Each structure stands twice: as structure tokens, then as C-alpha cells.
Length: 502
Image 1 (cartoon, rainbow, N blue to C red):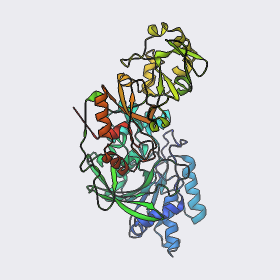
Image 2: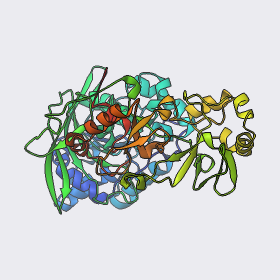
Image 3: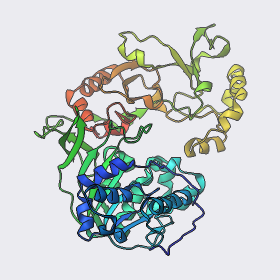
Image 4: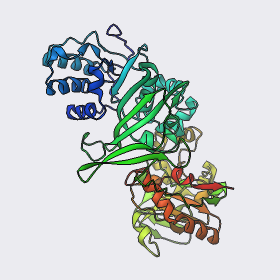
């Protein structure tokens, strides 16, 4: 294996590096019986070894168990690392601490290009990074690999809605198909978003790559254990077996009140749905739930997305000047017909919501951006937008970029005819632990991914939607997904799964 020294041009890149402390490597070795398998003849491979902590954990476990170094089967430890600095650090560590020359067993290559070879056990910590956050020059290289691995239908979906798919999904799937023997086992420290999130991770949860299946066996949820300081990503230890069928529910262990508690995990809606975490009674939160019946025009939506230009479109004050004009931020004059109250956190606790922020929407009520000719009819609006033209034209993102290139550089995302619906049933979709929808009239606007809403054409319909959304089963279902307090608490995709469109 050591003869492979691939130079892909990316050997200096660092992408989602989250190195595993040695102690937690030893924890995993013990929890999953990796050390026993190694002594019994298993060949262990870490496909993205960083500085070699996980492989070292096997050696330190052996030494602590009373084995001499010479008695340990070090010749059955293999690792691979893309980053040159990390690779050299791994060689140095094993040489200086244990007197071992691992140059024939460690390779320096991109795991996506390393020639396949069989191992009995995969033990790794793949890079944690969304496709959208990868360096641009690496995106072009890796895009076709996502398609080839079946994690997205085509390159275009990666550039649009599928951009949140995680690089870890690709590395895990590629490692299992190319580097694991039939019936072999794989243990990965990995983002639990692959098991708990919506659309971007759904294809990973087919637990199949081509003709190769990989069964989810067990999950140890490490949230709150402090392993990776400063990392907000939900993470854990996940156990797979190749060429086996997943059988739900699977054990899901988590740390509660200083002890490990075993729960049960399974998808509740579709086989590839996010996993719900249930207690031993397996009480189904949606057992008596009746799906909401909605027209497709009332699909759940996120709020207005300025694509990084909040300081241009959001305001902290509003004063009417005359029938057609308002003053925002105490000094800027704008046509009042394009300035709307923006929902804030405090509004959800008020019987009569009071505006605290406002948003400029240079749009018609059919949800289309104003044309340049239409903006010319409002000199104050035109002057204000031109003042920020450079900033607005240089916003990042594939979707807003296409609108900028088309000439409507003042456009935003999350704005359509639904933004001007007579009523909105709105809930806080980010960082909450309770699901409390509230009714807002048409002129109120939801705020980016912080909130989500269902548009309604009339008050009677809005009240019906509100009542059905307040079914206790919905909150129980959201809680079972274990995403409370995160950015994925109640995003539109989660609620959409509970709707029957007519």
C-alpha cells in the first residue's frame, strides 16, 4: 500500500479537519471490539487518518492491556491521508514514540482516487464539510464523485439545493465500497446530520451504493461530551456492516445524567426519512396523527434571504413621512409600499405584534423583482439601491448569482407570491425546543432560515392550518428527531413531510 504516493494538487488543503483525541479513539476501540478483532487477524484501515490518532489508539490500548509492542500486529495497521503535513506528522509520531517505520503502510493520496484494496475493519474520522463550503478548486474535482457515488442525481443539484450534502457522506460511502471486505465492519466518527437531516442526506440513507449495501448497526451520540471543542456539528460514532440489510430499530446510545442510556432509532415516515430517537416503549409520536391537507401553493417556505446583505435590506427604525414615503434608520427615505415589518423573536410572544425591524422588498406582489424601468419610477428607491450596487452585485451563491447576471442585482431569495399572501402561519424554525406556530397578516415577513411559514389565502384557511399545526404530535415528532436547539429544528422540509398535498 505504501507505494501509492498520489499528488492530486490538493495535498495542502485542509477540509473539515476535526482530529479525534487519543482518549476517544481508545473509547471507540473498546466500545466496538476493534482491538479484539485486530488481535484475531483483522486488517484495520483508516482512510482519512489525519495525524494517526485512531490507529495509535489501537497500540495504546494494547500497551495498557499488558501487551508488549512486539506482540502487537502492527503490520495490520494501515492509514491514508491527503494533507502532506498531517501525513508526515503521522509518520513522525509512530517513529519517535514507538520506533515504527510505517512508510510502507501509510499512503498519501486523496481517498477518492486511491486504488481499492480490502480491509476487515474501517476505523476513521472523515472530513466534516458541506459541499458548498469546500474550496472552489476542490469542488470541480469532487463534483463528479458525488454523482458517481449516487449521493446526488447530477452536478446541477449540487450547485442548487443539494449543496448541503456533506463530504463525509462521500468518504464513508466510497470507503465502504472500495476498502471494506464483504461482511466487514466500519466505525466512523461522523456528523449525525447524515442520519438526522432532511433532503441533503436522504440518498445516504438508502444505505446502498450501486450493488453494495451497508447496514446501519449502532450509533453512539457524542453530543455534549466535549470531544471536539468549538465544534457545533452534531456528531457521534456510527457502526456499519457491509453487505447486510439494515434492521430497524437500531440501538442509539447517548450520555444522559452521567451515564450511557440506550434508546432506539428508526425512520417513521419513509425508509430513507431522518431517524427518530424513541424510548424503549417505542411510542410512535405520529401514531394518531392526521396529515395536513394543503394545496401545493401553500407549501412551507423559509423567510426572506438577503444572501449576506442584511445591512442593505433590513432596518431598525421606521417613520411614516407622508402617504407614500417612509424614513428608515432615521435618515433614509424610501417608498413605503416596498418596506414591510420583519418578524423577530419577541413577536411570537405578543398578542398584537409590534414591529421592531423592517425589510425592503423591491418586488411586485406577484413575487417578481421590480424591473429597472419600474425602479426608475421611484427615485428614492433607485438612489438607495445604486448606493449599494457594488455590494449587491458581489454577493456569493449560485442562485443569487444567476439573478445578478440576469441584471436584477437587487433580487433576493425566499421572495415570491407567497410572501404577499393574505395570511401566514409562522413558526421559529431555528434553534428552538418547542413548536409554537403563530398567525401573522400579509404585510409581515419571515426572517430567512430563522423562521418558516405556510401562506394562506384567507383567514378561515389560516386558522385551520394553525389549529392543525398545533397538534401535539407534531412537536413530539420534531423532538424525536433530536434536532432541537439546532438550525434544523423545524425547517420547511421537516414540516412538508407531514403534509398531504391536494
